[in-house]
Length: 72
Image (cartoon, rainbow, N blue to C red; front, side, top):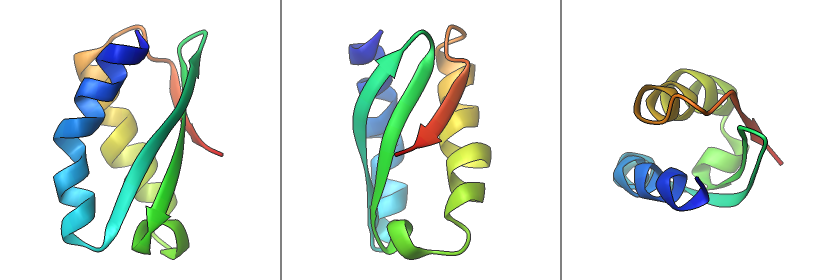
């Protein structure tokens, strides 16, 4: 599952990089995806919205086993 998550993140990454940020996959445990937002995304006040409405939504659409995405 971790490889599948990484593949989806690779699709999302250019959008984050366009705004000066990035995302790093830390781990996947029992359907919970742990990521670290980097660059501009790490300090942006909208980062949680990006995480939940962007990253989590896309991951759940492509990988139904994903339960949640959390920032660590």
